[in-house]
Image (cartoon, rainbow, N blue to C red; front, side, top):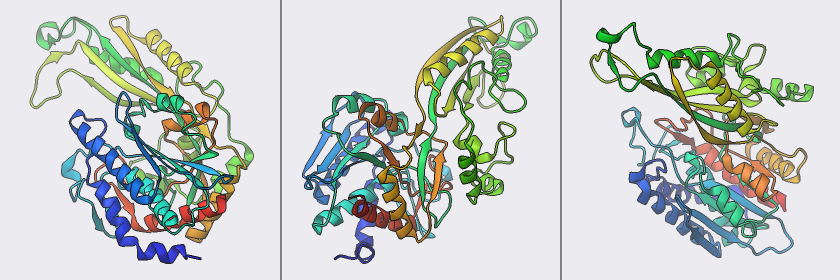
Length: 452
């Protein structure tokens, strides 16, 4: 029987070169100028699937960026695992804050530095490389399907439609996703919950055009002032969202969940260090992990108004706007939340302004089914690979496709990620620990053996 540790160590350099080939492609889905690069990344993943030995590899067009599909179905009567990932990445800006070019991968201090190293090219590539090894040795015990999309970083705009139209193609026993993080280096994590998401954009006007602040100041409303006044009504002084109905259906943690959270060895000081923030903030009476994993939030993602260029321009702006996203927890409906926030904004908008609110859509929260055999198999595989009991955690972020898998395919999803929270996801100097690249591949190998 082949020893996976020895095999993976022997092929480490080749595996890294496969990953570097993918990281060199600037597949930024949010920027139109990179559209051809996004397609190039899709084709590069197809090439890797073929080299891995998948017998059916396809590129599926969508109204946006393409979806890549591959399968290896040689084990009738054995479980079929659908592996999901994404090949698109965030924009690399600001470029001046990178210590090496974002699309020229570099290894420093035991870490791979490049855009997409941990989110998500590095993590999804691990699954393909393990598949390549096990298929090549004739020892893959399960059936595999891969679904790798190119729009995750812009909200998976067309993936739900693709899933709905390809239910037979994507049929499986469960889904595995490696696009989440561990709490700490050296200790694996199994994520059993994600927060959902709801988004809005508001635009506020107080007149037909900007005005000279000397000629009109003090006599007409200022859109920036009106916006600030309106946004200030969204939270109370204790950090709670002050929108009627916002917390409808939100449940408190059970005693067992509180014990699990309190046993996790992460302190507020460590959390602040990871965040680079000056202080903690949020609902009073809640722990930090409660706030980021199990409580809904309403955040301002951006605001704009008036003149912000170099120098001075003494205007009274006539228009102002803001982008808002809400992180949701189980039993919250995104559309109900959007409706409640919209109603609040309209009710509290100053009489001097006209308000337009745009619905940016959303996805519900996710909780893994407790006691599922795949969860137990993953716990054992992670324990063996890392030599440590895995942390059972939730995440504050959202993975939109999880909802599609659950609602459209009826499939449970297993979140087995190998990133770290301080690896600068979406920020300059994104990186991925070589240790987790190695141990993560070993965990995937053992998981497929145990899951059978």
